[in-house]
Length: 258
Length: 226
Image (tube, rainbow over all chains, first blue to last red):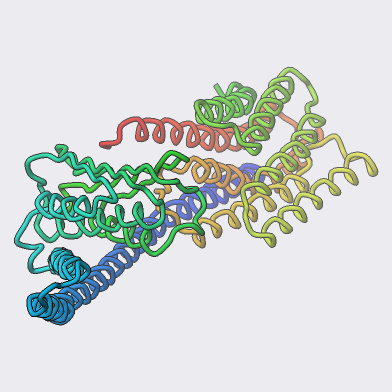
């Protein structure tokens, strides 16, 4: 073999070696990136799990606070109102010509006691757990309609296919939703449409309030954040559509994840 | 067969690259960097096809040096994210362009293959490839690399430019070696063609890798179950 052939052989061997190096780098890179991706996914899952735990704990704490509030309203304020009603009644009966105002006062206190009991019930987790979402929502609508200031209508299926715990969270979401309509949107008409689909539960809350700019994140208050957090905990989503003639909040909760 | 590999495989590879990128960018918004690549592979393919018909095609290879340097430089500049990497890309590109101007316009180079220029070019491109790889490692995304067209394209460039580095570096030396009358023979000429043929095969392998990746990605994105 002459020198030229020898040199060309060396060049070709060198090129083959560099080609192998290039292929090796690509293969190593693919393996390393796969491991890195797996690590990334694990980390993400861990973070999601932690967030979910955190949210659950927070909601449990909130439920406990609501429970306490419910007990306080029932046992303390409720008792005070009952005593006041009793005293007014006794005073009215003791007078020969009781003033009309006293009768009105007694009636107002009686109404306040009924309202307070209903409110206390709706905040009480133990009470809520005895009923399903639809029963609770119907009771809530009845309570709101009783004030004659607002009108709330409900369309619902026969059952909602969620566990009682998740029905409670969904109920709190809906409660937060129509409270927003009443407090911030100044609405007087609220329609709640609950649908049971094959894979998900959809609840739509519509109002005739003044609406708001959905894209403006600075307008999102604690209520909206709570709604988002709670739906996220159920693996679902919350969306708002708003115009000057009203707002619609759409809650989607997947059934398989709950 | 050797003649076909030596003469036509280069333009064929460029047109394979062109077809792959066109096929990938179908149904997608055409990014600036893909437009640059499409232009590069089209002009490059046409120039290299013209080169197959010329007796002396060194001018074409000198033009290819400038075209490759600028096109791939712009491609990497728009692909790389960090300022430092972009500055290194500009520096590499400028060095290559200055080299081209000095070698071909100021000093009028010899009518032989410019080994030094191509060695500088492939070193520069390999540096940019490593910067891209480093970028992938530091910016972890949830997208698999197997379905990342950019990665496979850059990998094909690495196979070509790293694999051909020694050929680029020594081709001028080998040409000079067979030029004297006592060594110039058909056998030696064939040996030189074989070396350039290996370079062409590497280029073709790179283009096939890119084409394969486009087919792989499109088949996987069509069937979500896979």
